[in-house]
Length: 343
Image (tube, rainbow, N blue to C red; front, side, top):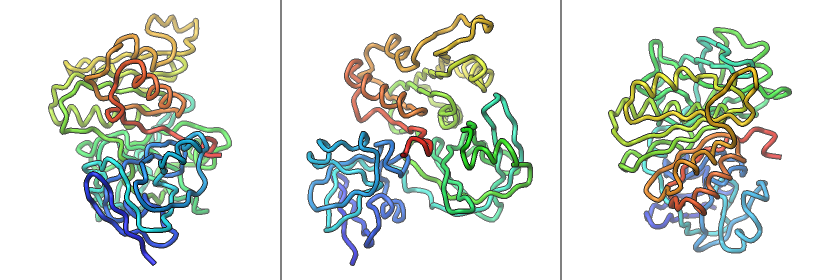
């Protein structure tokens, strides 16, 4: 028994199989619904149910509160329809544009620009045309079927020869995947992955100035977006804020400085929350999203792209909209939810 789902205001219609989530069916059929984690932890997929009935699977209570659920909001990533449904959601042009592929990848190189960050370059198979938007992510399929998500840190025009994607992986001690990356992984290892996923990428049909906001390894998809902006020759003003604890955590600080030197419209503002005395840091300090608010008390004419720890993304979204007049629909986010965030 399949159900029909109509998306408003676009009028797109797609079919959902029994026991399938709204989002899973949309991804399978190339319908561009907004989403991030696919695990009920980030809230990027939150939409309003206009007609019909759904049942929610496991999700974070803070991501969809009982009050929101009572008001008709659903998380498409964990909502299974019980009837035909009508959904109010902004469709994302391009989100379903490229086919989702399962493919092997080979470790080309593994470097550690910081003690707890690995930069992994993975060679793509020559016989599969893997396409993605700068800002999207892949999921690794582990031996036990578990999945781990990482964003591409290079733009699609910048894969090099042989074609390879770049990923930035923070070590989470005790983490099934990251312990392997930081312990046993070596060049030529084969990893199974699937992608591309996510609706976090540059909205190229806008000419609004851009604020890019990253914390920690949330810098990865932001770096890909900067490469895309440069490749397209866009002249939109861009300000990059990168928040980390200490100077050592700004693991690609030189890359960001060079990008800002190359691109006249790009300004780079690193912000440290716990600078070490021996670093002699003279730059900005505190919470990274508050640095944005100090510099941009009025964000009403801007777009914001935020990626990093869920607490940073949530605080930025709340405060930019409430205090800095950012239109809610111009806040694009990818919260880096770890396994710990999902329980």
